[in-house]
Image 1 (spheres, rainbow, N blue to C red):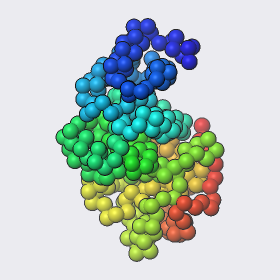
Image 2 (image 1 turned 90 degrees about the horizontal axis):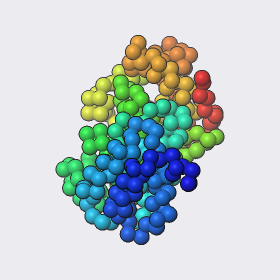
Image 3 (image 1 turned 180 degrees about the vertical axis):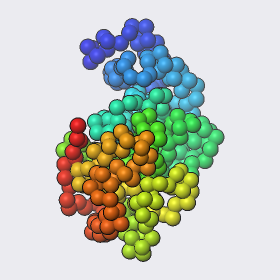
Amino acid sequence: MIKRLQILPLVPLALLLALLYHLNLSSDTPNEQLIAELSRIKAAGNSTDAELAKHLEQLKKKLPSNGFTVVIQQPFVVIGDESPELVKEHSEKTVKWAVDKLKQDFFTKDPTDILDIWLFRDAGSYERNTLTLFGEKPGTPYGYYSSTHKSLIMNISTGGGTLVHEIVHPFVEANFPECPPWFNEGLGSLYEQSGEVGGHIHGYTNWRLPGLQAAIRAGKVPSFRSLTAFDAHAFYDEDKGTNYSQARYLCYYLQQRGLLIRFYRQFHIHQKQDPTGYKSLQKILNTVDMRTFKKRWEKYVLGLKQGFEVDSLPPSGGK
Ligand SMILES: [Zn+2]
């Protein structure tokens, strides 16, 4: 810890210490914890110490009450009104874990701006404080990412899954700005139910499965050509109820075949020639006949069970 602290420039460190002290990280935050927060601040990356200090100064002015704990978890600042222990636990076990694992497999760049992650302790706090801080009512009971407010705004009482989902979005924005909605949401929703397998982040089957299976049985799932071509309006506003789940279980299928990371890289490299990812998908699946693939995928999805896996392959990162 001492070694890590020594690499920090002296003045910003002093400034941050003073600021964090004023922020009243929590009245019972021991110095040890404060030092631990600071040890994580690194001069590297997109946000300098000075920017972070300025950001914290602004944050201090808008904290809704003294009951909030602030934890620096680069590239984010986590702010929550649960107990200091719980806020710290979420920032380490969910935020840091997800950031580390997502960067390991997908992303090289941090979001350009310092982003706040607001973890409100219950529905009341979530609704009240979202209105006070951002002047809006949440459109979802779980939480969302707002690039306008440079914030992830979460009702953390609904669990950490949505938080991991939303963490994916600013990383996609920073690393793949032209990413179409299907892959942005497919990847986000894949990891809303995730754990670690072989040292990698791994999505599991979840609550989106039964609805998708019903739509498959009813023959109501669009072709992959359509799904991948949907713009934001078509994907979000005209969703017939399967866009998220179809995208999620396509990503899940690729993951289970050990192809997801390779697909991402292929798609990312060739995005100019193939903005929807459809051709990269054909290449990775080694087929041009996507109708037959869809039938195979549908059969596969119908055989899945919630919280159960049959055929996981280790992820293959390619080169
Ligand atoms: Zn999303």
